[in-house]
Length: 83
Image (cartoon, rainbow, N blue to C red):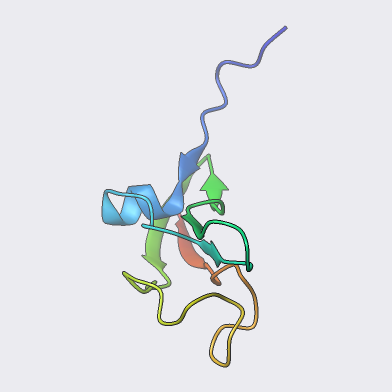
């Protein structure tokens, strides 16, 4: 039986009104550039989002990882308050 009472919310959507433009950016020779949102912080229950880590609007290099981003995924984070 499905649990339809458990609703998950996205921290970035709740705080900013939109999801991040991208959380993964990669490009390998011979393939197309990939720049999409793959990572989310989901929550439910008696929590409210206090803040989320600010993310860049646009990639800062040809591909991640690079000297400032150690992974092809951006770091995401959220702070919650218990209601």
